[in-house]
Image (cartoon, rainbow, N blue to C red; front, side, top):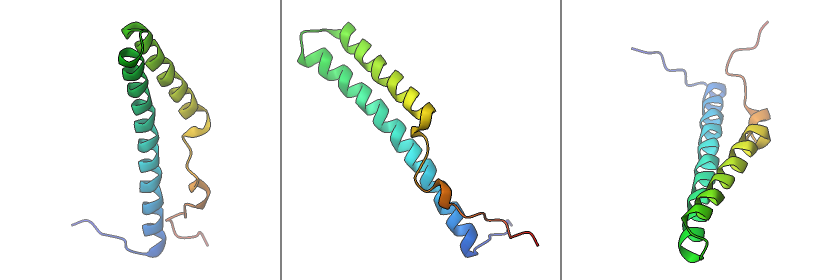
Length: 89
């Protein structure tokens, strides 16, 4: 059976890592939701049509991917994640 480490430092590090991944997932979900909404609104609520709606959705995705690759992919807790390894003596 696997050994479970329940000391405070490793629990905090695990929580911080999980929260960081969750926040990244939420950012990607918001980018895709914005693209879907822009496509649907431009396609059905204006006279622009499907092509312009698809173009707008691609622009939203491109801006979102650029933002995630250039600084938006960090979380505010990055500097406070404790090191789960014991300190070196």
